[in-house]
Length: 310
Image (tube, rainbow, N blue to C red; front, side):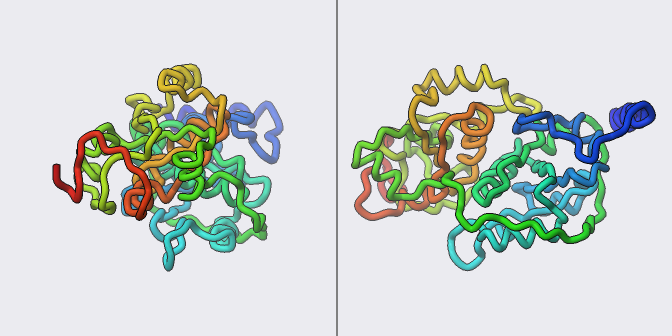
């Protein structure tokens, strides 16, 4: 009997001896759900799963049964100007997916939930504050041999309404300059790789260079985002994460702004610091592609690269 069959059998046994509540609570207030929990609750009408993967074609090749696909570069952004999806745009997506105020929303994706965490940040901004991430994401689901499906699900439309006012989870260039030039008591966390942080490279290998300057925002500390996850894609424990960030001076005693290249990797760290550790955190989604191209702003560049040259 494979893992999924065991989960189904266990759920059937539970149903036989007890009345199942209308809504199965997603592990209390935990911002994460396990693959075991999700496998056992896929048929619950009050659970809705969304896939947000870096590889936007992986969904069609097989996804968690019942999951709705969200293409990060079209569904979760404004396609005309550089911005996240509007409240009205996300509301339409949620209505089509049958999400109500009582729905437990679970996001997952490839690459250790890289863009799934960005999706969670976007959802949170627009009032879906209880969105969960599947701990381990697509990587662990597949490693556990749990089922994938190629069918596109259809749900009865809902009438959910999102608030017009966005949650204060987003930092702007002016907020960052308040720290760098105005002395605001806020910690800056750069979650890019060490070579990006030092200015040795402009962007990760294979990724388009989008800034004319390399380096980092003055005063920022470096914590590469991948340091928050285990080999199997799950997040490290809260105790491990708290200790790792405290080692670089991030202990939650003052507000934090995270940033990366375009704001997606830093959303992963935002999720760790805000949702798992409970710190006051905003994500600067303009990130280095905005800051590194802005005229007249100070930059720290230990490597000394100028216009791509040493």
